[in-house]
Length: 177
Image 1 (cartoon, rainbow, N blue to C red):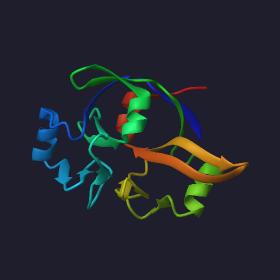
Image 2: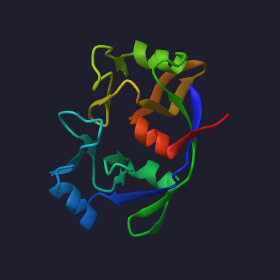
Image 3: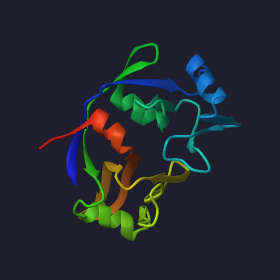
Image 4: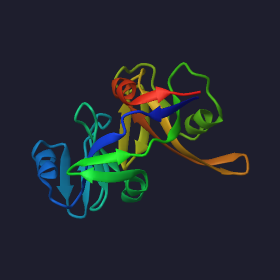
């Protein structure tokens, strides 16, 4: 895996349930569907159902205007409100993996435990994972970001990860030593 850091530290985001104009627009465009007690957020990686979020969670808008849910606690821990829909994201050093990179113990854990599947016969759903209450998919050249690895001693017990579109990654992250 390779270390990366987000370079684009200014992000656009909304807090769900505040009925902002941007939230209303995303609902009108079908990118967010509001249900009784939860929302479905249709990011670029969703297929048949949206990622599950709730009132108080945040939705970030990427460079391609795709929405992505963030849990309230994670968002508040790593962002500072500037004005309007603009937030500063504190740059974190993360691990990334792309098909063709060496498979370390984290990627092997994800694959061996069915948390990540690779389908070499599909261009659109090369990667699949159950995240945010739905099946997410990503293309072969997309990137897997590793946010956190929980261990009991040396044994991996959980991995917090997600997919990011290669174009979005190239515009907003850089590799570091």
